[in-house]
Image (cartoon, helix red, strand yellow):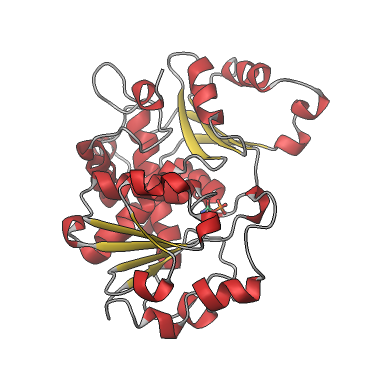
Amino acid sequence: MKQHDIQIDKDGELRHFLTIEGLKKPMLTGILDHAENFSSVSNRQVKKVPLLRGKTIANLFFEASTRTRTTFELAAKRLSADVINININTSATTKGESLLDMLQNLESMQVDMFVVRHNSSGAAHFIAQHVAPHISVINAGDGSHAHPTQAMLDMFTIRRHKQEFTKLTVAIVGDIMHSRVARSQIHALNTLGVPEIRVIGPQTIIPKEAAHLGVHVYHDMHQGLQNVDVVIMLRLQRERMEGALLPSEHEYFHMYGLTEEKLKLAKADAIVMHPGPINRGVEIESSVADGPQSVILEQVTHGISVRMAVMSMALGRSSLTDGQERGQS
Ligand code: CP
């Protein structure tokens, strides 16, 4: 079964969120609109709405994370859900328990949602195929395959600054081959109608099939950055690279690092994005990461409202008005 088939229930609503691929534009726009409604919650004195009161969400992070794990936890708490963070390193999986046995045990504790990060591509989909029918699974990043909530918070950030997707030129720079973020971003940008998506990087870390994804490939940063509206920088995913795909980091920075000088090739009002973690002096100059065109920390903030939107939609409680009507805002 294709991943997008199991993401949507018989009423056309989101059940799992595993990949952007295959989701239709109204679903993506719906997530962005819901997130827009939730964004004010984080600025209130009491940062909570009761939408997911009584629901239990388990964070299963088999791979390191700062931003994604924390913002999923904050998002769940701001929706009034109970959150458990399973520490994989101290869980019984270290005593040989299988992933599925672990999940069945958590299911018997009446968990309603699993948020899963795993270094194997397809892990979240595998889990979604095996959970009980009432449980939702959200992919928080699987191998080099997909990171759908990251892509949606990136789309949210772009929409906040640029409004119309259909007039934009977006450049994604760096390690496209190993990046689950880039793959998800490309699907989202295409679905939302961005007419020109460029990927820029050395031949060794741009996948051969990139052109089939509806993007233009550049190996020269000076050409690729000309007149773009959005520059998305990516980290070199050394942990996923096999063999020597790159020259030294110094040489990589010289050719593909985003400096103030190179940023001048983009439009004067271009925004600079990065999913994090950033490696200063490798893919981005500090003065650009911290500069006036950078929206990198804003992306992190938007991660909370986008994850609130996805979690509440998957658990069938997406209306903020309903929650307010129940008396707590
Ligand atoms: N962008 C992102 O996924 O960051 P973390 O690895 O810190 O979650």
